[in-house]
Amino acid sequence: MPALGYLLAPAMTTSFPSQSIRTKAGRTTLAAALAAWASVAGCAGDMAPQSLVERFRIIAVRADVPDGPPGTTVALEALVADPEGEGRALSWLWVACRLGPSLDPEACADPERGGIVGIGMEPTFAFTSPPLAEGEIEAQVMVTLAVCAGGTFELPRDGGTAGTPECAGGDGAVAYKRVFSRESDELNHNPGLDGLTLDGTDWSDETSERASCAGDSCEPVEIIAALTEGSAETWTEIAFGSPRQRTEEVYVSWFATAGSFERTRSGGEEPKVEWTPPEGAATVDFWIVVHDGRGGTDWMTRRIELR
Figure: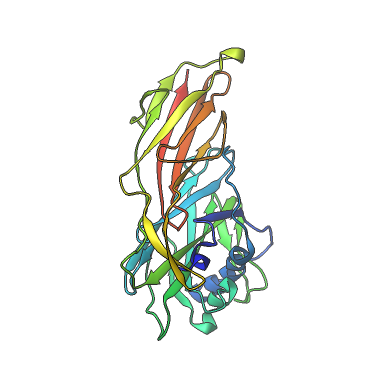
């Protein structure tokens, strides 16, 4: 696939814009309002993730079929962290729109241009990948997700795009994901996490306990992620008219609510990182996310109780 298809990060997140907008129901209104958000994805760069999770965030978005033939049902879900308000009600807004030749996210989300291929308001979302026009090699679908924690969405009163939805009375976040529709013998699949080890021992329990520390006794521990077989796939890239075989560079991003990682992401066949725990008793949540650099994603979650 041409390199252009993978210029965007697997899932990019941002905070809500803080604009005062009131509610008007209707799916067309929703799609139009989210168009302004989608335009951010067109100019944003691949920002390194911040490992310390201190507030509500969308950490990752996963499509079960990140790259499939036209007519495929694509199901998406999000990895959401809410360390300060765990248990709060969440409101969800999904919009999927087909990018045109200009790859302009704002234009594709314009209801009058007919680019919208799906809208959802549940924690999970699905759409059917669009057909290819004559002469097209691929179609790209931009999925925009907005989540409001502990509040309600307010949408533009006039149904236009003068403002963007606000998470009123709560905390909000937005994430973007591109999904590809194409006919190929080299379709991309999600990488996988086969397991984790913590300080040399199997870390299969979702919740575990460790002794707390203080001062110099807070020494780093090593976390190792085991990838499933075949996570790093090989594909043919056409560069300057010539085919070239390439292999994915799979990497893991590390997130936690406390402590510190020596790095935010790790690559290689056995991604690993050192994590230094915080001082004193604490409950620490971890999110371990693997990316293949071409839109494929998987994750695991863990919790450590420091006593």
